[in-house]
Length: 226
Image (tube, rainbow, N blue to C red; front, top):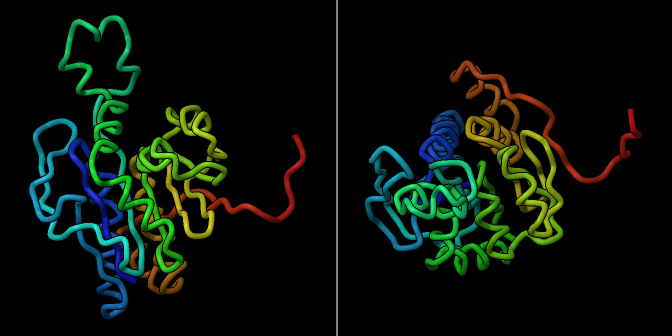
């Protein structure tokens, strides 16, 4: 399983690094059955996070024809509506807003590449936090089941997605995770699903992190009201 973690200007580092570390450890534990790299729509470059000046270097271009997993993180910045009246007089605060950073990502080649990846049956698209909003705002998740940070669930639902309040949601070739640290759980779940529970368990022990919550899937009995 090869995993391409896609960075864009304004990305949230923990959304990317948490699953990167888990999946990289999974590659070691599985003797190379898992590989992972940082990519961007533009190719190798320095990609700056949303706040704080930290940058990571991508080593390749997102390849929507390569089988495996394409993983999209969310953005780092100020939570809130960029149209708030207090922000209209402060351009820097508008630029710091997460919705603005997600929208900026849509003004690149990224949506075209992600669409091609989602149309390839050999690829699973995964997201952490606001990564699902990138896909949803690009019109790629209509009618699908997905999750995001709890503060973005209403926005996700408004795009025509069946928003689910769960830590990880498995909708077949789309696997989404909720806020920030859920990237650890996403990485572990992908290891279990793709290379087996023994590898996932070994990495879970190495990281001293037990996955939280139930991975939600469509199907099965629907719960009655409590």
